[in-house]
Image (tube, rainbow, N blue to C red):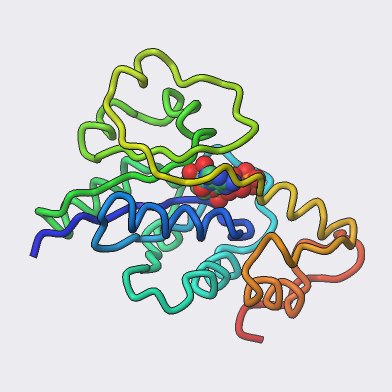
Length: 205
Ligand code: ATP
């Protein structure tokens, strides 16, 4: 059966409530059959990454909850080298022909889309869907704006992984910003604490 599948990529370092809200809003608002969560392996744009791919994937799995239409994809984690979305989309097209792939991004990524590798080719292979995000003053480039996109009906949610990492490093509470299971995981594994205090424990320990 041909499906309409949302592709939701990110560093998810850590996954937070806005990610979960965005995935649900896309599922409902865009009538998707599935949302495929795709944690990056090596992000070519973000070098701050603080938790391992295995920890980030484990947290995404917890955040997905019991929604059967959420699926975790290891395609970028298991691929060597930098994570380019175009490589991922090409691989998915080849492995699962016939689906409509809906690339879900927030406004900040939309404003940077013209910097993504071969973005016009990428946009020829997917339906683009963009969600509101506060704090993004940058406008997308005119060339990107010329391409059609769908809007994901998401209220403004002022949450970022950067802020969560900073709060954790400062010993502050993050319980309102991530799902409870993710908060517990972060605590159990000692993730994102000030580097001097404690080494993170491996996943599954
Ligand atoms: P960081 O602060 O480390 O840059 P982040 O909070 O932006 O991380 P990512 O994992 O980079 O999280 O985001 C994955 C996707 O989710 C991106 O397309 C991003 O635009 C979107 N996204 C993240 N947070 C929000 C938010 N608060 N509102 C809307 N979209 C969001």
